[in-house]
Image 1 (cartoon, rainbow, N blue to C red):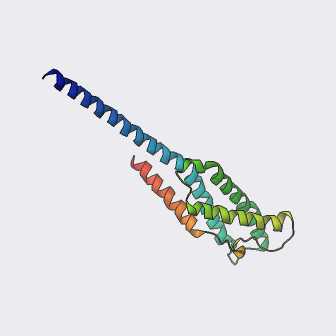
Image 2: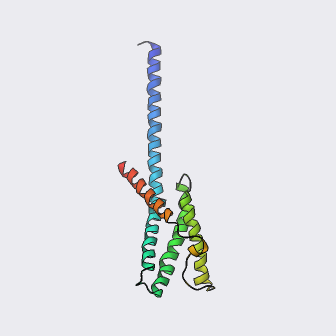
Length: 160
């Protein structure tokens, strides 16, 4: 092998090594990003929306008393909505962009918290706390999006 061939082979091997290192690095970064999204955002958010969904069914059960409904509003939905809002605001940096479904959920929560304040804190209003009557019904598509995204991320991470 002549000198030029040796230089070419050496340069080619170096380029392949660098390219392989870059691909491996990007793969690890991609996995790390997905893991952070699931761990810090979609996983906790999924638990909150599933809890909310179950308590919503309980709230509208014929067997649920007005005392139990008040308990759900004060001790499940209110802290759950505050936690969801906090999670979206403080952990959305893990996402490449904030999906509309997340903004829709946040908008609903903000209106709901405003209604909650009027009923429970300021006592300016009576009745149940609902944002839907103000034109901001609960965005069920957000729940589907959050649960599907969490499931997809789990699937990608478990494949390795």
